[in-house]
Length: 221
Image (cartoon, rainbow, N blue to C red; front, side, top):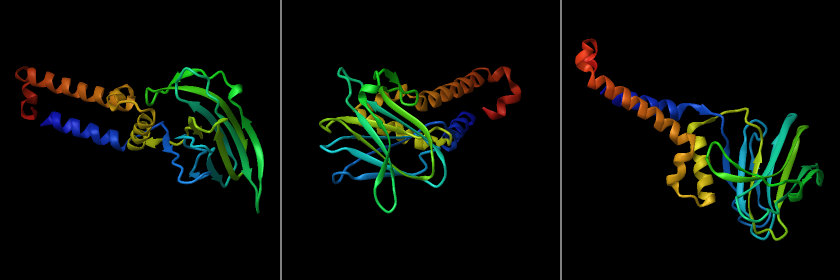
């Protein structure tokens, strides 16, 4: 009974707790130049991923105050050099845009790295970081033929996410990569809880095996 209660308690704590992670959103295009509207990109890291379908993909973010704007382009690991390019613009009123920066695929060596949260490999593309005034901004990602898979990483990790939000983000990335779910064991979202549960099981088993030598614990086991 004690062991079962400990396992239940650990599961509740993990699900209610928060971690420094990100949110992942798939850019599903219903029609050309559909825009994804992001919330609070300046204090929570967000990964927008998708597959270009003959047109660039675009996201929009709005801030009512000065904020740190951070953007990084990523590509799936592969044998060819990615050709992902990005452009950042400020939306002006009543109409028009002002270019802030361009990110060119040739500006990056496209190193391969491993994401700690998911355990997945990715290639690092060009990045941009600056302090921008309040306003509405859009980011467009494209390739010469607009047919590639891509990831845009926006924002900084200042605001933690819940365990469930982090789990949903990692699961979404695994679906995007086409990676078998069994390999989710590479994520700390899985092996940390499993490790805790194994320790609890081992602790409970040790108490049960030594209960005759621990008479003051007999009524609890």
